Amino acid sequence: MKRESLTAALFILLALGLSAAAAQGCCAPILIPPARSTQVPPSGERGVLNTQVSLTYGKTLTLDTYRGQPLVLAVFSTTCPSCVSELKALARLQAAGTKVLLVSGQDTLPDLVRFAQNQRLPFPVGRVAPQFIAQLKILAYPTVVVLDARGRAVTRQQGTADVQSLQNTLAGLRTTQGR
Image (cartoon, rainbow, N blue to C red; front, side, top):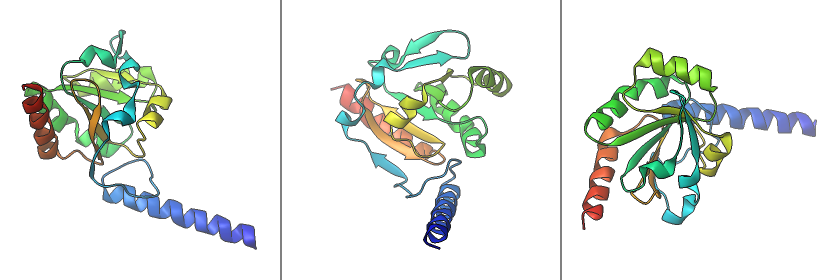
């Protein structure tokens, strides 16, 4: 009986997590809904710049390539409707001069190649190790992490991206960087 109660409780928690994820426009389940946009302590993501990204066009880069400029790192899955729906907003950010990198730790590289070709995206798409996703403490897709010019994660948005908030964060980074 005790085991059945525990199983029922876990199913309830999972259902609540799925409901919370859906309410935020997320595709992956979470058990405790985080704040929509959160500040990330600068020391929280050491080693991020060493992360290798296998790009869909056959090259490999590290996030260190983007050192010296802010980067919008969008973590997604090709099977996530919310992730796909925010691609136009990310393309607008790229068109306005912001570097955008779309990464997945879940999809295979051939799946990402097909996805990038079908979507005709204006920014690079690549695969990262699932451990990188865990290192960033990403609990749901889509999640957007803004990295400053030194590669430190300064903010994170879980669920469909709030473009105005991202633009405000990026403007603040550019102002600070210009000093």
